Image (cartoon, rainbow, N blue to C red; front, side):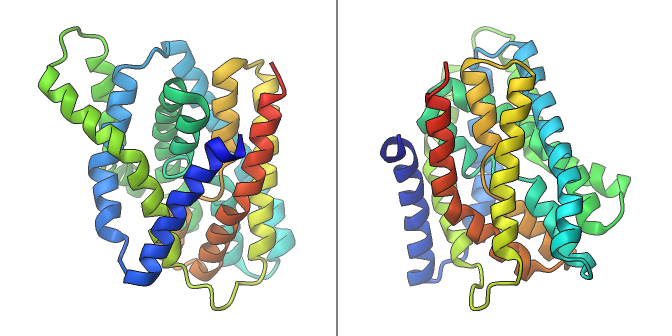
Length: 298
């Protein structure tokens, strides 16, 4: 399971990291391509051809809401325990613990572990994540809820428009073949782009001095997020691929967007960067344990 699922993922991340270090490549151009082209194409084509029912999509959205708000509530005492006298560090703790890398890392993980159906679930997960990132994430990073800013952030993200277009397209027969071939080609290229981009982003993380508390924060993200995902899945009575996909997405390391928000609002970006790097590195072990656990239950 480790060799089949996780080795290809971290190999491509390593390629991106190595290229970034050797060639000093900036991740921003590839990041913009992934954000505006590859990611929307992957979400659109996955949802347009998805076999997920409306009820299953609702379950995914409810799981995301429950998991993220649960992690936010858990982040409050953890932040106070680790960073009692540092308000900015407590905000970073909430960002790191609440938001997972369900796109760049989560989608490839679901594809390799669960196949096409896993990817379909991941696409819905990513769309729900976007709403919470632009609302709860902005509120955490800014220190106060700014409704106009949150709404503006949501409207600037292409994923929600992509989801809406895909849900409309799936209800109609005769989708143009020429357009389908283009979106399928982009979808097939999205996974390696996401993983190499993640490596490039990690190569830019300054690690000359690991911020104090970053290791404990990274470990807390991986252990608490995975434990909560398992708990919600079993309390909700989820089964099969839907359960496995949601647990895996809930167990991924900290999101790159947590660092982006920390940079945007000047909330201890050094701590956010170190926690991102460490949680991603440690995730090779924790995700392997999660995969073993899922393979052991019916």
